[in-house]
Length: 336
Image (tube, rainbow, N blue to C red; front, side):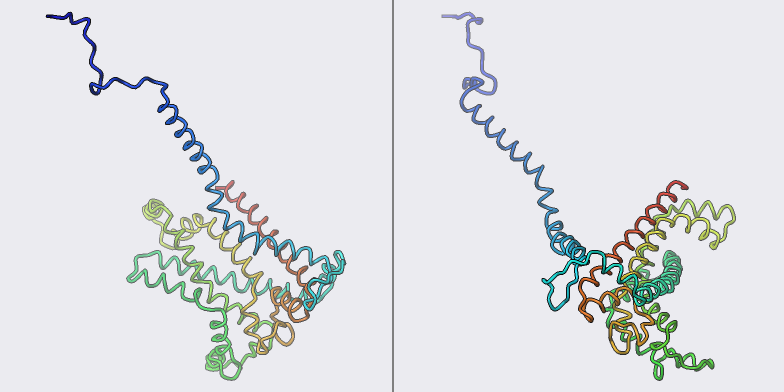
């Protein structure tokens, strides 16, 4: 018997099985599971970055922040290396005492002069080397890697080699000077020759490092600037003066600040250049730096409180250098 089509059951989409009614127990369970996973994902997204960076902060707190705070606290006490737990409060006496010490000002002056003698030629030579390496040279990768060889060399090994070169009676430097009629120089005994010799070691070690920094900055300069300058008839020297140097002003400022900070912390070179291998920086303290003066007070004379005061004084000097760097950087950005 025929049936009316309007009374027939409509087919279910996706198959003959009847659809699941919304809001059933299975749907609620699935929603709860998705909500739980969503909350877990949110917690993971919120806290996992802190877990990734936490090892750095833990190491910094253990080996950076704690020694800094402890050194500041020890600088206000009289404490000796033989009894580091016995502290006697003296306030700012350690600071006033080092400021009244002629050896401190001698070390500060030596640090300044060695910093100038080593930093200025170092950065000028590095700029010239970077300018040469910026051109297309054969085996350019080899020359760039060779620039890092002095930086990768041990301070002790490099300084001992330079001690042989600057020897008074057997050194190659005095031999070369004698060939042109100059008398031998006592590099390890006189003030200015000793500082020049120590600065030479620093220049040798860090010139290649700064040259690669300048080279990376030069390669970031658009070639359109050089092409425009060449079309205007500018020679390569004028292109270097009017295109390269203005574009490298932020990089030059960075290297000057980093080199200044490094010069204020010079330690290994003057220590090993001393013929007696002591912390006095020569028989008359002629090339004793602030780093050597700190070492002498803390580990030779065993005055940890006074050495801590010297360390915080050097830290204050670095803060002043950083502030000056910030002010100059702002002025350069404003002028550009």
